[in-house]
Length: 157
Ligand code: ACO
Image: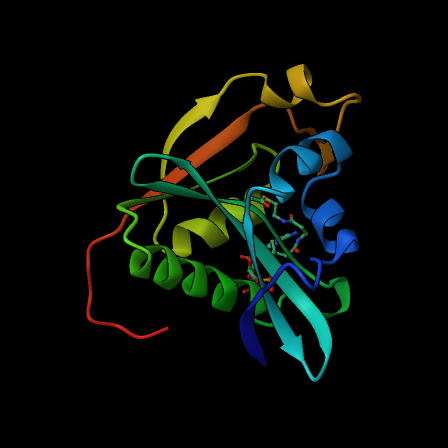
C-alpha cells in the first residue's frame, strides 16, 4: 500500500467521500479547499483522507474513509498517522478531527492515534444535515471534537 497526494488531475473517490460524510453539501463545502491523500493498492484507491487548513496554524482531517471491504485491517490507522506526519511536516501546530457522537468506534480509533477529546459541537448534525442520521441505533446528533498538538519532529513522511 502506498499513500500519496492526489493532485488536481485526479479526483478523490466520491464514494469514499460520501461514506465518511453523507451530506453532499458538506462535502462540496470543503472538497475543493482540501488536500487529498489516498492509499493505493496497485492503481486502486482503498482509502483516503482530506486535510483542510482551517485557521492559523491549524489543520483538520475533515473526511477519512476506507473501502468497506478493507476496513478493520489497519488502513485507517495508517492514514491517520500519515495525516499527523503530513500536518506536522507542513508546519501546523494543531490537528483536529470531528465525528458524530454515535461513532463510538471512530472516536476510539482517533483516541488510540493520540487525539484528545476537547469539546462538543452541540446539535451539529441536527442543524446542518437534511435528515436524522442513526448509527449503532443512536441518533448522530452532536459532533465530538478531538485535537492533537503537533510538536516539530525530525521525521520523514
Ligand atoms: N465500528 C466499530 N469500531 C470501529 C469502527 C466501526 N464502524 N470504525 C473504526 N473502528 C475502530 C475500532 O476500534 C477498530 O478496531 P478493531 O477492528 O480492533 O475493533 C479500529 O477502529 C479499526 O482501525 P483500522 O483498521 O485502522 O481502521 P479502518 O481501516 O477500518 O478505518 C474508518 C477506520 C476510516 C473509520 C473506516 O472504518 C471507515 O471508512 N468507516 C466509514 C466512514 C467513516 O465513519 N469515516 C469517519 C467519519 S469522521 C471523519 O471523516 C472526520
